[in-house]
Structure formats: C-alpha cells, structure tokens
Image (tube, rainbow, N blue to C red; front, side):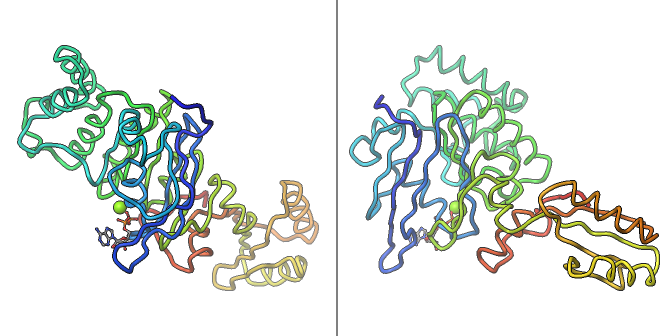
Length: 323
Ligand SMILES: Nc1ncnc2c1ncn2[C@@H]1O[C@H](COP(=O)(O)OP(=O)(O)O)[C@@H](O)[C@H]1O
Ligand SMILES: [Mg+2]
C-alpha cells in the first residue's frame, strides 16, 4: 500500500453530464480512521462524488486517491480497500439475507467456509439472525439498509463509503444505523458518509464538508462551522413589561433583540461565562427578576442558512438545542 496520511484524497474533481457541470472542482481529504460527512441538499453532487471515489464513474478533471491508490490508474487496488453502500447497493431481492452475504463473500474471493462464517458474524452484528433465511424482498426498510451495510462489510474494508445510509428511515431505524456506524468508527474504519441531515453530520462526523451545486461551500468540524455563524446568545425572560423595559435600558446597546410578547431580551454572549455572570449581576443590582433564562447556540441549520440563503433541513431534522 503506498504511503499517505490521507485515506481519501480528492483534488479539484470535475464532472459534467452533457453541458451540465454537476461537480465544479470538489476537493476533500479524509484522515485515516476518521469520518468525513459530505453534507448537502438533494442534487448537490454527493452521489456523483462517491461514485467517482469508488471507481464506478468516470470524471473529467482532477485527481483522487484512496489509501494512496489512484482511482483511475489503480482502480483494482482501490476496489480492494473499499466498501460501498447506499443508494446504489447490490442486494439481491430474491436471495435471503444469508445468501446475499455469502454470495458477496464469494465475490470477494473468500473461501466458502470463511464466507459462511463471516456471514453468520454479520447477521448477528446487524440484528438479522431471525430474518436470515427470508428473501430480502420481505425485509422492512431498516432491515434492508442493515443488510446493505452488512454486505458491504463482508471483506472488512479499511475504507467505507456510506451514501445516505439513513435517508427515509424511521427515527428508530436511524438510531440503530447510527449505532452500527459508531461501531465501524470505533473499529478504526475510515468513513465517508453523505447526508442531507445536519443533525447526522453533527452527531457522527469528525469533519464536515458542505457542498451545494457541485461546489464546496464550507468545511470544518461541526463546532468550527457553528462558530462561523456567530456566538452564543443569552435570552432572558421577565415577569412583566415594566421589568422588561427597565432591563432593555440597563443593558443598553448590548440588546440584540427584544420581544414585548415573550417579555424577553436577547444579548450576544462575549466569549465566556464571566460575561453571563456580570450581566446577571447588573440586572440583579437593578432589582430585575429573571423568570427564565436560555442560552442559544448556533446550529448547523444556521450555518446552512447563512451559507446558502436556503433552509435545507426538514423541520423534524432540526438540531435539538438546549431550550
Ligand atoms: N446520469 C446522469 N445524467 C444527468 N445528470 C445527472 C446524472 N446523475 C446525476 N445527475 C445530476 O447531477 C447532479 C448531482 O447529482 P447527485 O450526485 O446524485 O446529487 P446528490 O447525491 O447530492 O443528491 C443532479 O443535478 C443530478 O440531476
Ligand atoms: Mg445522492
């Protein structure tokens, strides 16, 4: 295996369909043993990027390597170190879960005995033992995704691509999938996960690359991205309008927002808890009683909104913040 610090490295990938350029120079790097989330709305170019990196799709410009192997000139080597799962999965509907796994094991040139043993192991890990001998077409959405992921892991690849593994899953299956993904991460697998869900990227990924319209529009850790959109805000609620008025006067130009209806005032917190403490002291000295207090942290939704001017996530996917 050629030596490189990056398990996945793409430089300036471009791809057009006819006259439509769907990737306009995508660059990304994934450190070995970490997870990168490629976050973007429908049509952003996530699947196209994953298909290029996994040697399934030709591209027009740029370069890409997986574990140091060039995806064009060393495609066979690349395929030997990757697992791919998601929208383009290769589960055979007519075969049982177990048969699917054994068949894929044989494709990866495992002996019959080790393919069978590995299949048994994965059926256990993915909670598919009871359904093992039923055709895949009888599986629920969540079971199918788990089988899909299990199939891609038959040969324990060091690098795995997960293309929207939880899209369309009910919340319980999504959580179950997250647990499986966390186990993969704990085992040291390098993962590139694509998702439309901000919450998912926030929960799972070490780093996030946000793409929109075939371009990288932001990247960093979830915390870095959130810090770009601003600081934490402190919202203070008072028990009557008179107190609110006084508080607004006392806080002066620190007031970022106030609501007569909610009887609340919002200020931007400067750096640390010290600022919260002194603010509360100032209000206490003016004999203003706070009935409720909340700290609002910027969410990845805010990042999306400020970067694209568009709200990308479903309301149901909004990141839950301390209210
Ligand atoms: N085979 C194709 N022919 C023409 N356009 C395509 C093809 N595949 C994808 N596209 C277009 O490329 C863009 C990116 O698609 P895709 O990579 O699937 O996005 P994502 O996975 O982020 O939803 C979309 O506008 C899509 O319509
Ligand atoms: Mg896609």
